[in-house]
Image: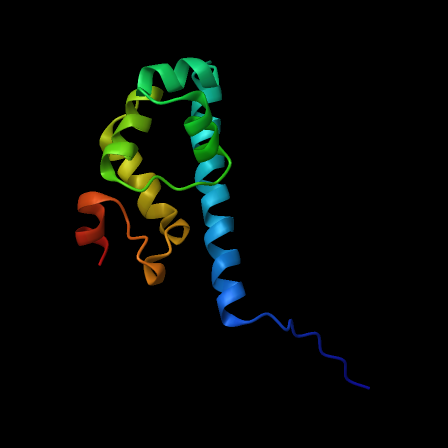
Length: 112
């Protein structure tokens, strides 16, 4: 007897799930760097010029929507823009390009 287990997800649901997973992984990277540097959420957010709630949203999986937001994360963490661009490229699945949520800034042109 042969048994198969195939999920009955729609393509749309699978794509949404994929973006959420990649967003969560990006957020975990940001959180790990922050904790490695001994920064609190409040301190990292202050250094980035954003609210603690906005910082927490990124760590929870909300991908930054602009290059300026990526650069603010870099400032908050004391990281280079190159390091942050690398993280964006490594976690490119967090951005739903099919829904108009393109990769931030110059990365969009480099990655396309």
